Length: 540
Image 1 (cartoon, one colour):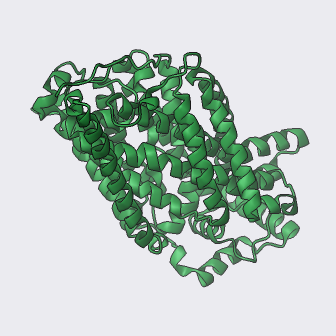
Image 2 (cartoon, rainbow, N blue to C red):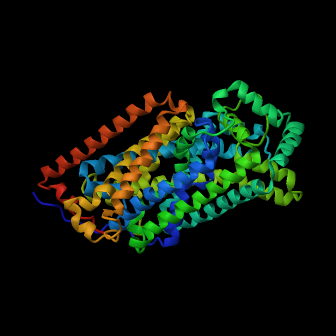
Image 3 (cartoon, one colour):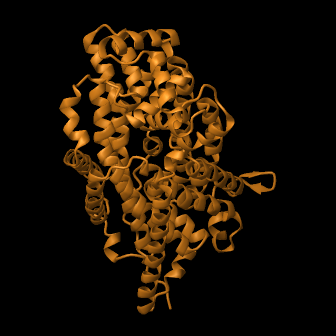
């Protein structure tokens, strides 16, 4: 048997360091993940110390994703995500399986979640910030038709954002990132300049007097009585370590640069720097919020509104969402006297979750198309997977395929929304993608079959003593993922879903293995040994 003739990918290196860093920063989704950290963190792991957890997570994430994905991306600068790395270093079957799990299944599942979540909680948070009566949005956030139509609109806009090429997408992305980050910055300033005693006064003055809410202390006492398991007076180390899991959302997802590695200018430098800048920017914001947000609203109150935001008890009547965005808008409404400035601040703060959450949808299109494109370049998949539109420089047919699959998925969410399922998807992605790729990085310097790639790598001489930095980063990366998986499966909020998601993970893996062997056998019938292609990098 012989290897097949290789062709150029047709993708264009058009992403600068700024584009690459912003792409990394985008997928860390600052505003949305701050909501996740300070709403779901105390609800899932009561008793955590946000600042200590942020410091530990940041140190670990310097190794994974920054070094793990930076070293691999600089050594093998091709588009396709982890597929190129794992298929060359470990085994083609591993590369295909992980790629199908991540690019094929997880990316579609992300759209399943995040498109309807633009409506709820996205529109719900924005409407609350702007004091839009709940009755005006109730149909959208509470009915399957409303969730489906809203999710479909978000999905169509995402499809159009990526259809016309990366350059056009980056314009949309960077505009929304600036607006979203400005909203996070304004909210952080309000927390910084508001002492705790003043916040308590504002809550008791506005929330109680105008909306009939329980007073500050009454709300805390209500949650202690209703759900003592969701509350904590002081922090402990077990919960603090568990908080690494929600905080990692803000620091680990810059790995996505791997999906456009073949489209990055000067990839040996820009991929690893893009990973670092995207991660450290979000880590600094998280550390800042861990101090000023908690100091302003109080540790027990943070836990109390975390419970309220997840459970929405009948006694909560405030228009503002019970999370960091709503609390910042509450302060703004009290402090800012100018109506125009107040509305502008409320809009920027209230929309930041929506902007960051929506950006996950076009990214999922990019990752889905690049992952399947990279597989097909190695003859694992139909030939049309490699078709690149001559004008847009995009695998348009794969984008259309993802639109169809994601619309089917959105239909299911509209009728059966399960917000905790987001953790189920992430648990699969962490175990399959991040752990496996960390192992690849750890053994990369010692694998004979990729010795020629390692020798050409800019990381070849990066060592701590006699040990390659790639190996150290890979080992620490596995430790990080182990902590996150432990936190997820030990969380009471995920108990009901683990019996559902564990077999889903298994079935997706079985499909991925079958996919590889089907195409390998098909190629063999044509006299082609596709395994020979895995001894070299795909062409640019």
